[in-house]
Length: 132
Image 1 (tube, rainbow, N blue to C red):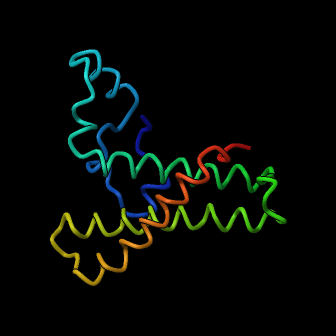
Image 2: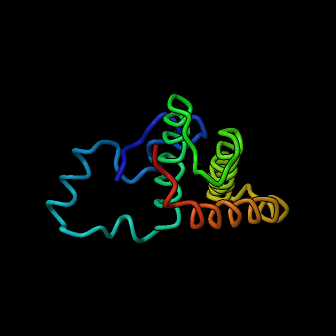
């Protein structure tokens, strides 16, 4: 479990929206409760924050060490796939923040949903290739 980070802050996620502010809080909770109930109650949010953070960090890493799966002819093609995953999860986070404030519209949901579905499909397809 990650802690609150710069990628989430850039999207407008508040520290109060994140289950644990520090690794110490997480350890204290686990030691006390010996379970991950806080993470599973709203797992769609928790997983989205984790996946988005890791994808952003991965993108920074592959930018420094340009490598890509052999099925792509160029690094830019692979980077485009990673960007599509990032964009899909980012759109969900932005929508969720608005929805929590009861400010999200049906149109915004309809715009976000295919992006998220595409990001999830790509994540499933390219998960074994997410290394550098």
